[in-house]
Structures are given as C-alpha cells and as structure tokens.
Length: 259
Image (tube, rainbow, N blue to C red; front, side, top):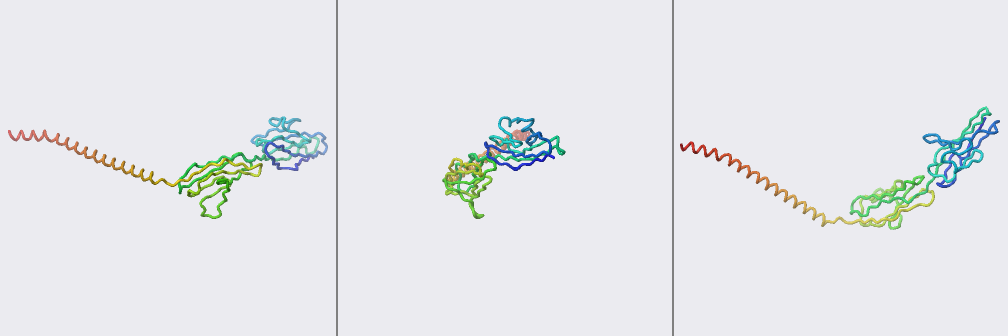
C-alpha cells in the first residue's frame, strides 16, 4: 500500500518568508504515483495538480519530491493543506497527510486613544490597539517615557489590561497629567510604539459652575414672574368680560323697575 507522512504537521513562519510543507511517501509497486496538494478552506482548492501549481501559487512555489515550498508567504496563505498520493498499482491506492501553516505577523504601530484633557475626579480610559499582529499583541503603557507598572493591589487608582490595551483611571488627579504612549509586542519581530500624546488634568472651575447656577436661578425667577403676570392678566381679562356681560342685564332690570 501507499504510505504518506510529514515530519512537520504544524509549520510557523514569519510573513514574507518561505514555508516548507513536508510530504513523504512510499509506494508498494507504483513507480510514478500522482501527487496533489490541496488547501482546505470554505471550499477545497488545488495548490498543485497535474504536474503544476495552480491559482495564486503559480510562480511562487516549488516542489521537491512531494514536499512543497511556498515563497514569501502572507496571511492569506495561512490554513490547512493536504498532500494526497495516488498509486493506482498499489493494493491501497490512496494516502494523504495534513500540514497546518500559521503565518506570524509582527506588531504594527498601534493606534493610541488618549483624551487631551479631563477634570479631576472623573473616570478616564486610554486605549491602545494593533489589529494586524499574529498572534495578537500584548500592550504596555508609558507615562513620560517611563513604564507604568501593573497595579499590585485591588484598591489601586488605575487598571491595565495587557490583552485589550486599556489603561483605566478610576478618578484622575492632577498628578496624572503627562504624555502617554503604548508599546505593542507579540514575540514576532520588533515591538512597536505609538507616538506619545499629552493628557492634561484640570480642576473643576467653580467660578463657571457658580455662574451657571446664578444664570439658571435668574431664568427660573424671570419665568416664574412672567407666569404670575400672565396668570394675573388672565384673571383681569376674565373679570372684564364678566362685567361686560352683566352690565346690559342690570340696565334692563333697572329700566323696567322705573316704569
């Protein structure tokens, strides 16, 4: 029977490097077995068929025996591949083996979201994200070029999630003002850092708040007085209307009495 195996069922390479997909076979009697490579995705597609590479692999892959080398792989090449050997003269004519290819992508410069300003006592979140790296990056934050250590106790004033890239302050103080930057790393290639962004923490402006309260109070007073005047004018108008309705009746009654 035909036997098929691989010495590397899982292959990990960095993006834009070469990936070797190993396939070894042994036939019982057939000297010229048919070699095929397929990629399994939503639909199975041919990589190597009828003696040549197909589709996106044409011109960027080579074969030695049944072992295939893909050149300058990208994230699009990641997935599961199957090597199939057909030996029609053997008693068991078909054998196959699978190889999984993971393409590693180093971190890109992360996107950092840092609020320009905030008031003391407010809760503030800083966000850092790199959506391209494989495996997903982990994140660390810096303030004024100095690393911010992870909090060691539960009642710390801030929290850092190294997986989501969120730095959260429960209630900022003026001491939290500074320039913040974030570093993304995933063990592939060099870590990348975003440009530092300033955040300024300011005290609540009591003058503005008191002024706003006074304005609101005056508006309420004016509205209240206006409502009272309108209500009073409405009563006066209704009284005049009543008097106008009553006066003709009184006149008729007086006239008949005198007669």
